[in-house]
Amino acid sequence: MFINLSDEQLVELAVSEEPEAFGEIVKRWERKIFALCFGMLGREDDARDAAQETFIAAYRNLSKFRGEAKVSSWLHRIAVNQCLTTKRRAKTRSEDFLDEEKHEEERYFVAPEKGSPSRTTEAKERLTLVRQAVTSLPSELRQIVVMKEFEDMTFQEISETLEVPLSTVKSRLYTALKQLKMKLERVPLEIA
Image (cartoon, rainbow, N blue to C red):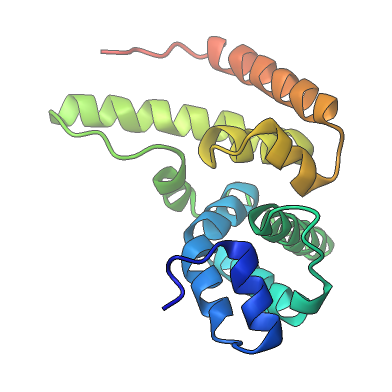
């Protein structure tokens, strides 16, 4: 019923006459929003909660959507804010989201590699090193890496989502990739 409509048309429908249209928006974006939250928070439970809160907040504020940005950018911005709120709360509780449930993070950063047990072990070791390097980045750099490299968002979409200039997005990504390279060069990676 709603499949052929754009996200913006779905928002209009959800606001005016068919609140069920928002369900299609959730269906379209729930995996990407969860992945973004997971990349920023590092814990599946927290990511699931933040993604859910994102859609609740979006639904409550549908009438405020002005169409100045794409629905996807709007949802990403809400998700980023939810993640930042979650992190602030966690900081006051002295929780460390980056070190817990590391095996859960592996699913997000790289798809499992098929092959011999030794290749699988090497791939897991590389994955662990990359994950540790990404999660050790400062939050403002990590969110850019997650959005660009794992969510395949454009620089413009990231700029709109984070409400920062395009040049800031590019410089943060450059800085993040430079830091990742330095961190990963310190550790010998054996690539088969």
